[in-house]
Amino acid sequence: MKSNQITKLVTAALMAAISCVTTMAIAVPTPGGGFIHPGDGFVLLSGIILGPLYGGLAAGIGSMMADILLGYTSFAPATLIIKCLAAVAGALVFRIMKDKMKQHIVPVIFAAIVGGIVVTPGYFIFESFILGLGPATSALNIPMNLIQNAFGILVSVLLFPLLHKAPQIRNIMDGQ
Image 1 (cartoon, rainbow, N blue to C red):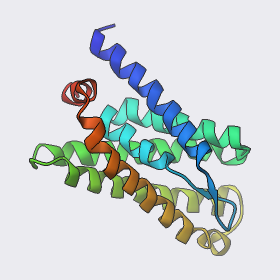
Image 2 (cartoon, helix red, strand yellow):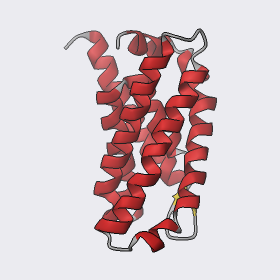
Image 3 (cartoon, helix red, strand yellow):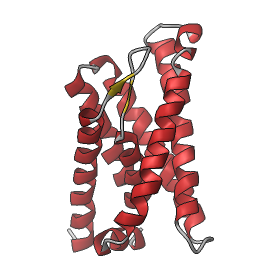
Image 4 (cartoon, rainbow, N blue to C red):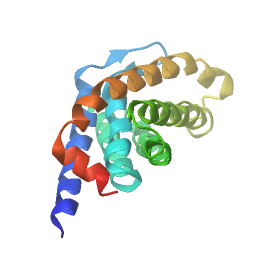
Protein backbone atom coordinates (compact mmCIF):
# COMPACT_ATOMS: atom_id res chain seq x y z
CA MET A 1 0.00 0.00 0.00
CA LYS A 2 1.21 3.46 -0.79
CA SER A 3 1.66 5.98 2.01
CA ASN A 4 -1.22 8.15 0.72
CA GLN A 5 -3.55 5.14 0.64
CA ILE A 6 -2.67 4.25 4.22
CA THR A 7 -3.25 7.84 5.30
CA LYS A 8 -6.60 7.84 3.51
CA LEU A 9 -7.63 4.52 5.07
CA VAL A 10 -6.65 5.66 8.57
CA THR A 11 -8.46 8.97 8.03
CA ALA A 12 -11.56 7.09 6.85
CA ALA A 13 -11.51 4.96 10.01
CA LEU A 14 -11.08 8.10 12.09
CA MET A 15 -13.96 9.85 10.31
CA ALA A 16 -16.19 6.80 10.86
CA ALA A 17 -15.32 6.85 14.56
CA ILE A 18 -15.89 10.60 14.83
CA SER A 19 -19.24 10.30 13.02
CA CYS A 20 -20.27 7.58 15.44
CA VAL A 21 -19.09 9.32 18.60
CA THR A 22 -20.45 12.76 17.72
CA THR A 23 -23.80 11.18 16.86
CA MET A 24 -23.90 9.42 20.21
CA ALA A 25 -22.36 12.05 22.47
CA ILE A 26 -24.72 14.89 21.63
CA ALA A 27 -28.00 13.27 20.63
CA VAL A 28 -30.99 15.53 21.29
CA PRO A 29 -34.22 13.51 20.97
CA THR A 30 -36.92 14.87 18.66
CA PRO A 31 -40.63 14.12 18.35
CA GLY A 32 -41.11 11.06 16.20
CA GLY A 33 -38.24 9.06 17.67
CA GLY A 34 -35.25 10.62 15.89
CA PHE A 35 -32.55 12.87 17.26
CA ILE A 36 -30.48 15.89 16.31
CA HIS A 37 -26.70 15.51 16.50
CA PRO A 38 -23.46 16.86 15.00
CA GLY A 39 -22.60 13.50 13.42
CA ASP A 40 -24.12 14.44 10.07
CA GLY A 41 -21.56 17.21 9.76
CA PHE A 42 -18.87 14.53 9.80
CA VAL A 43 -20.87 12.41 7.37
CA LEU A 44 -20.70 15.28 4.90
CA LEU A 45 -17.07 16.06 5.69
CA SER A 46 -16.16 12.40 5.13
CA GLY A 47 -17.38 12.62 1.55
CA ILE A 48 -15.85 16.02 0.91
CA ILE A 49 -12.43 15.14 2.32
CA LEU A 50 -12.11 11.47 1.39
CA GLY A 51 -14.08 11.33 -1.85
CA PRO A 52 -17.00 9.08 -2.75
CA LEU A 53 -15.58 5.63 -1.97
CA TYR A 54 -13.72 6.09 1.31
CA GLY A 55 -15.96 8.96 2.41
CA GLY A 56 -19.14 7.05 1.66
CA LEU A 57 -17.95 4.01 3.57
CA ALA A 58 -16.74 6.06 6.54
CA ALA A 59 -20.02 7.98 6.71
CA GLY A 60 -22.24 4.93 6.36
CA ILE A 61 -20.34 2.68 8.76
CA GLY A 62 -19.86 5.35 11.43
CA SER A 63 -23.51 6.38 11.37
CA MET A 64 -24.72 2.78 11.32
CA MET A 65 -22.57 1.97 14.36
CA ALA A 66 -24.13 4.89 16.24
CA ASP A 67 -27.61 3.55 15.44
CA ILE A 68 -26.64 0.10 16.70
CA LEU A 69 -25.00 1.40 19.87
CA LEU A 70 -27.91 3.77 20.62
CA GLY A 71 -30.50 1.01 20.19
CA TYR A 72 -31.91 2.09 16.81
CA THR A 73 -31.00 -1.26 15.25
CA SER A 74 -34.02 -1.30 12.94
CA PHE A 75 -32.64 1.86 11.31
CA ALA A 76 -29.02 0.63 11.04
CA PRO A 77 -29.19 -0.90 7.52
CA ALA A 78 -31.04 2.13 6.15
CA THR A 79 -28.62 4.49 7.87
CA LEU A 80 -25.65 2.66 6.34
CA ILE A 81 -27.09 3.15 2.84
CA ILE A 82 -28.56 6.65 3.29
CA LYS A 83 -25.50 8.21 4.96
CA CYS A 84 -23.20 6.50 2.47
CA LEU A 85 -25.22 7.96 -0.42
CA ALA A 86 -25.28 11.40 1.26
CA ALA A 87 -21.49 11.41 1.52
CA VAL A 88 -21.10 10.15 -2.05
CA ALA A 89 -23.46 12.84 -3.38
CA GLY A 90 -21.66 15.51 -1.38
CA ALA A 91 -18.27 14.27 -2.58
CA LEU A 92 -19.31 14.38 -6.23
CA VAL A 93 -20.79 17.88 -5.96
CA PHE A 94 -17.67 19.11 -4.17
CA ARG A 95 -15.38 17.61 -6.83
CA ILE A 96 -17.35 19.22 -9.65
CA MET A 97 -17.36 22.65 -8.01
CA LYS A 98 -13.98 22.91 -6.23
CA ASP A 99 -11.87 23.52 -9.33
CA LYS A 100 -14.19 26.26 -10.58
CA MET A 101 -13.97 28.37 -7.44
CA LYS A 102 -11.08 29.95 -5.58
CA GLN A 103 -12.69 29.51 -2.17
CA HIS A 104 -13.70 26.00 -1.11
CA ILE A 105 -16.48 27.12 1.22
CA VAL A 106 -19.12 27.55 -1.53
CA PRO A 107 -18.56 24.02 -2.86
CA VAL A 108 -18.72 22.75 0.74
CA ILE A 109 -22.07 24.47 1.24
CA PHE A 110 -23.53 23.05 -1.98
CA ALA A 111 -22.09 19.59 -1.28
CA ALA A 112 -23.58 19.63 2.21
CA ILE A 113 -26.97 20.75 0.89
CA VAL A 114 -27.02 17.98 -1.72
CA GLY A 115 -25.96 15.43 0.90
CA GLY A 116 -28.80 16.66 3.12
CA ILE A 117 -31.24 16.38 0.26
CA VAL A 118 -30.38 12.67 0.02
CA VAL A 119 -31.04 12.05 3.73
CA THR A 120 -34.59 13.37 4.10
CA PRO A 121 -36.21 11.42 1.25
CA GLY A 122 -34.05 8.41 2.15
CA TYR A 123 -35.51 8.17 5.63
CA PHE A 124 -38.99 9.06 4.37
CA ILE A 125 -38.90 6.13 1.93
CA PHE A 126 -37.45 3.79 4.55
CA GLU A 127 -40.00 4.72 7.21
CA SER A 128 -42.94 4.71 4.78
CA PHE A 129 -42.33 1.52 2.90
CA ILE A 130 -39.77 -0.63 4.72
CA LEU A 131 -40.91 0.04 8.28
CA GLY A 132 -44.50 0.25 7.03
CA LEU A 133 -45.39 3.52 8.77
CA GLY A 134 -47.01 4.88 5.61
CA PRO A 135 -46.40 8.21 3.90
CA ALA A 136 -48.66 10.27 6.17
CA THR A 137 -46.95 9.18 9.38
CA SER A 138 -43.47 9.34 7.85
CA ALA A 139 -44.12 12.86 6.58
CA LEU A 140 -44.40 14.01 10.21
CA ASN A 141 -40.65 13.38 10.59
CA ILE A 142 -39.65 15.53 7.61
CA PRO A 143 -39.43 18.84 9.56
CA MET A 144 -37.08 17.29 12.14
CA ASN A 145 -35.01 15.69 9.37
CA LEU A 146 -34.68 19.11 7.73
CA ILE A 147 -33.52 20.62 11.02
CA GLN A 148 -31.01 17.78 11.37
CA ASN A 149 -29.81 18.46 7.81
CA ALA A 150 -29.37 22.15 8.59
CA PHE A 151 -27.37 21.28 11.68
CA GLY A 152 -25.14 18.92 9.66
CA ILE A 153 -24.59 21.59 7.03
CA LEU A 154 -23.65 24.13 9.71
CA VAL A 155 -21.18 21.75 11.37
CA SER A 156 -19.50 20.86 8.06
CA VAL A 157 -19.26 24.47 6.91
CA LEU A 158 -17.77 25.58 10.24
CA LEU A 159 -15.28 22.72 10.53
CA PHE A 160 -14.09 22.38 6.93
CA PRO A 161 -11.86 25.50 6.95
CA LEU A 162 -10.16 24.25 10.13
CA LEU A 163 -9.66 20.73 8.82
CA HIS A 164 -8.45 21.99 5.44
CA LYS A 165 -5.55 23.74 7.17
CA ALA A 166 -4.08 20.36 8.14
CA PRO A 167 -1.47 19.28 5.58
CA GLN A 168 -2.60 15.65 5.76
CA ILE A 169 -6.17 16.61 4.84
CA ARG A 170 -4.98 18.79 1.97
CA ASN A 171 -2.77 15.92 0.71
CA ILE A 172 -5.71 13.51 0.77
CA MET A 173 -7.92 15.98 -1.06
CA ASP A 174 -5.23 16.83 -3.62
CA GLY A 175 -4.63 13.14 -4.31
CA GLN A 176 -8.23 12.52 -5.38
